Image 1 (cartoon, helix red, strand yellow):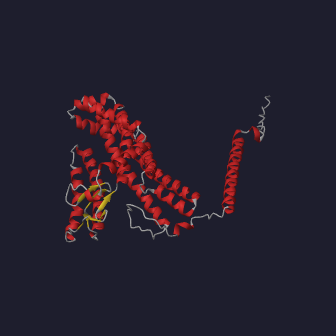
Image 2 (image 1 turned 90 degrees about the vertical axis):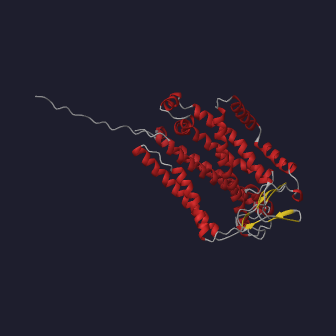
Image 3 (image 1 turned 180 degrees about the horizontal axis):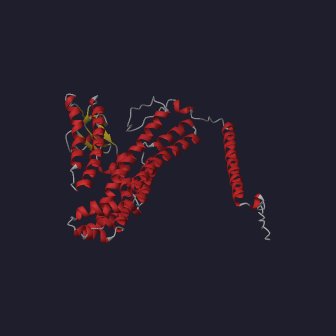
Length: 396
């Protein structure tokens, strides 16, 4: 007779919580969080006590008060009678304007210089290399000072302004030129141009589908450009084709009317573009050299011209290497735009500093500066991360 074996299932011994790595980790995190909250509370309480002791007002109520100072080149309607909130909005829009334009032209110039750096033409390659070395090794603030001084020293006063074209004047107050007079049709033309850009995007997607299915290359870019230009012209024509111009006129010591591109804005934009494009050029050069030579030889073996090889084969693959570091340079340009205060351009930092000096609320002002630049940087990063993900290789 066989005796059935009995299996004794032993219960695992309980581990003390201080020896359990999971529980110990939770405890450490809770302790660190408690310490951080305590430090934050102590700093906040001390700040509040010091502000009350010195009778300094706190809060953001000053935003609704009258600003009392003018801002040069406001992108929206603004006067000294407006509130601090509107003044800060003008400063933020000025920062956004110079950052957006600077990023676009930095990418264009940097791409051209980076490609030229790899040219087989000795002179072109050496000039591109010299541009990169010079612009990278001169601090951007010194470049801003140089361009700002150049504008004021190289051009005459408004009374002796250069007159290169009808309705255009160039002097030490900037470039002043005629623009179309205000008319309700302009906003509809802008909307029509936006519709044209959307149509261009849809045409591009359609052209890619046709090319994938049939191999036929459709002229989508010419069609899209024609659509983008034609729609605003049709709107303008249906509105009676208004041709009135706001022509600048010299009155006293300056021009009135038209549009003015100030030396401050020009110096800031040129300095940021030249400095950033030098770094972008090196990134583009490295991205192109990261593409295997076999890809280039295969493209040339099927009869593609050098320009087609670069546009259709090399750059699409190089973008996967180029996009992440270029994103960092775009963020650097946006943050470097805060140096505008050194040459008197009314960006957000300049307007916020004036607000701080008049209201005495430094903490709120600095917090707004950090918040605005954080929003700009995170928005840029979000868009570029989306684009980088779109351009990434998809494994099957």
